[in-house]
Length: 76
Image (cartoon, rainbow, N blue to C red):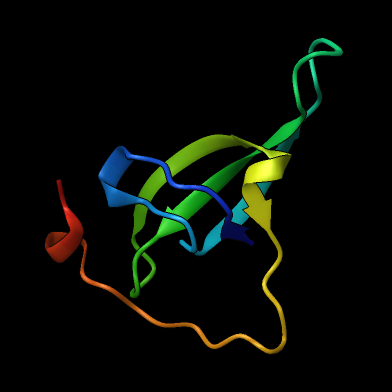
């Protein structure tokens, strides 16, 4: 899974790689279903656990290459 939109906690941005966890059904017709996701750093330490709507997540593709960035260089 890859995050499709920017989120502010811990400098997590679009493209952050995450592990998809629990599915959350839509509680009402006007609310989108989503997932709990775990975002981690390059050595596997958890940075954040977020609940995101399905539209904010994208599957990784075979034609993509993972890369890393420093959290410190992008911190606000």
